[in-house]
Length: 263
Image 1: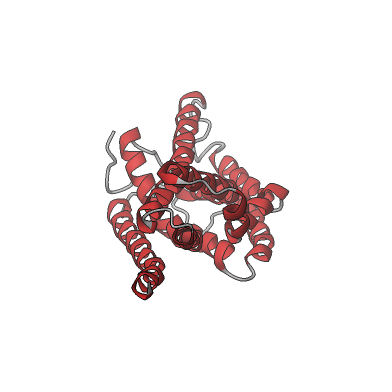
Image 2 (image 1 turned 90 degrees about the vertical axis):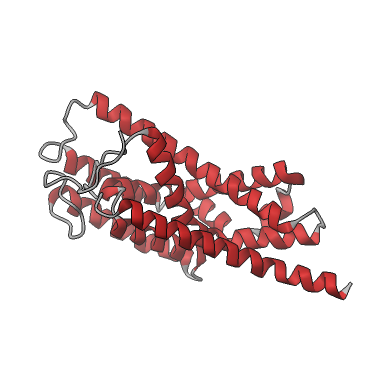
């Protein structure tokens, strides 16, 4: 019995090491694949297969650190319920979580392609591009202040209610719980991801900034209050982007990226 309890006490630590390792590896791959590809706002997203691959890698790098508390809470709950291998169930939970973010990426890709085909060049940086990009950042700032943002962020920060009232057994249940948590996470962070698209989705600098902001909101003790400060910052940044030149944002009208994406 003592041996079994010792093994159970080690399982969350093992899960934490594995998830941190996956996130670190995803960052290494992301840096390797995105280096030199930042073309600023409106960066072409390449072919669908290429985009899905890099997007999933980015989400593992950006989102797994902030999702770690929820994943470890799921690991402990699985152990307490004696519902099979906790590590296997946690892996399925994380797969469901990343599936939700993959769905968001596919929706963003579809919107990008639709705008690219219908806008007729009006979104070029020497035309309406700065205003559209700035408007997207402004919209993200306004969303920070909405009740939906607050509800989704509260869910991401406090997993207890989710596990008490939304538990599902089995691997399918673990996947569904991961996908549901991922949906809440998308509801919390879709505006910040929109900021990333507006500033340059292939920018390593802005990817790291957005990832740090998401982590701070979800993990820091004052994360709920931080959203108000972020809202003010995003509103200022949106206006600056629309009517000025923001440092760290690549000018899309300049030279293109040095590395070409697959068609």
